[in-house]
Image 1 (cartoon, rainbow, N blue to C red):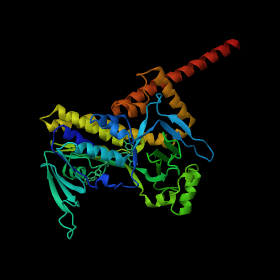
Image 2 (image 1 turned 45 degrees about the horizontal axis):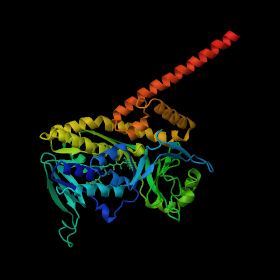
Image 3 (image 1 turned 90 degrees about the vertical axis):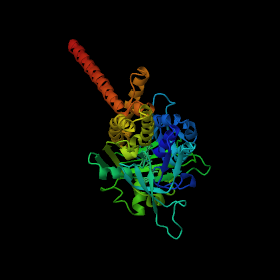
Image 4 (image 1 turned 30 degrees about the vertical axis):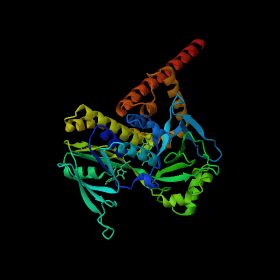
Length: 445
Ligand SMILES: Cc1cc2nc3c(=O)[nH]c(=O)nc-3n(C[C@H](O)[C@H](O)[C@H](O)COP(=O)(O)OP(=O)(O)OC[C@H]3O[C@@H](n4cnc5c(N)ncnc54)[C@H](O)[C@@H]3O)c2cc1C
């Protein structure tokens, strides 16, 4: 995701760029099934695309989602729509991973100084020399058909920038070779599995198209995002272990029974449910915090390689794209001192990546549990009322994270302060009303 975008930014800045990607060219149709086929793109990501003039190109493939469609537990209960913002025009955008990847890669390839090499696996990095070692199975570099062993090539540059995701090989090289690299990874007890709701026979969407659907079930949930072809990609987030979990739900009857009980309105729309459940892998949900994200002027980490977060705020890719904007700004600020540029990039992003990691975990609880409650919907209404009454002064946390570019850490701090003021005022108002009632009751008595 961030690789293509960053290559475009660096290409625009005039660097000679070689982008090495493990997988084959997404334009050849090698979509990896079962791994977040679509994602929510919002303001930060769109801003990063706008800077390169490719936002409209991307958004033409996207489906706007204006709010959450909550599917309550129990048969026969109608879904409830909760808008994301007081402004009905504010929406997040469901976009296919392949479409987005293709657009950013093509944007990078418009610069003649950017070269993209698919089927190259980075295995190690020489940190002091900025050399990446890559195994390749690509036709151009394969030794011969008779010798299918991967060939190892050395890619030398002034710097190696790692955009190789949560399990980054470059970061692992740094972990092995640098003593000062702090590293922490933590996994949720939940895994995820992707499932499908196909289009109706006439090609239309079988549920409300302009919404992110959520089936909150307290300790677990399913969500669904629309695709342009009329289908929805559903993701079940469920405990790996436990009395009712991925581990204990194995047979066809158990799987069907679980879905019929928990998601009765979705099951009739999922004809391939059993096959999808068996065929698609169960992914894990990791949060990675590390630092520093750079080594001298030689190596830097960007996107999930630096800060993988769980997906519940729909911000991982948006944050990775924001990294590219900030890194580009830092390279502009220190054109002759890349180490300072990397250091400033790290300082500007680290606190925000950490804040996002916390927000994303907290939002899991909100999505799987609180969205089902009337209190949640009342809080959203109060949020929207305050936002309308105090424009520019009161901004709900979700709005700040999703519809502004206020740094994540500042958004989290501001939301805490707002909550304190709002709840403090509400409590004071309740105390005042109760005291007045008691006072008048005593007078009358
Ligand atoms: C279920 C799920 C839902 C999500 N939903 C959203 C969402 O709605 N909105 C959002 O903003 N984010 C979402 N995310 C997060 C988002 O997918 C990531 O944050 C984003 O993809 C990070 O981009 P990246 O470029 O850093 O890493 P990736 O997108 O992971 O890209 C890394 C690339 O490096 C390649 N690679 C890996 N290892 C090597 C190697 N050794 N050598 C060469 N290449 C290598 C990979 O093939 C891949 O192409 C979701 C994540 C998950 C798991």
